[in-house]
Length: 176
Image (cartoon, rainbow, N blue to C red; front, side):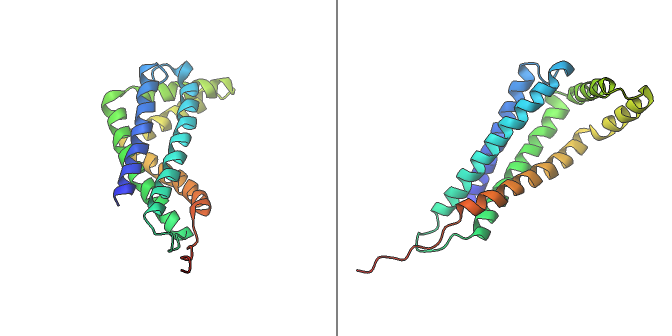
């Protein structure tokens, strides 16, 4: 349990640090820079998430003696538990970020998406309806719920893949 908590917390802290850096460098306050900031967050978030899931699963595997099998299910279970703690801590941070640290973030996202829709040639009526919907789903509580679900889905997919590589067969002890 301790390794799940530790690696999940480190994953959330890493992503929180990236979010705060993007906020401080203006990527979360300027609609023109938002897409670049989103790409940076996605790529660094994947690197942080994959790295810590793999390291965490390996740490759990290290607690199992070599003479015992560490099967796919155990590796997957470790990955899912790390993912659960990362998603819980990350969701708590994102709620605080959207509510208190950067309460104007949702409006920046809406402006960036509106500009994208205008560039695609959508009518102003459709853009207004889309902006209305975006405002509805941009509330911190809705973002927390969808963020948790999205984080868990992505992390479980990564865990499904990583578990295949990190499982280990039991090693027979040498005969004396």
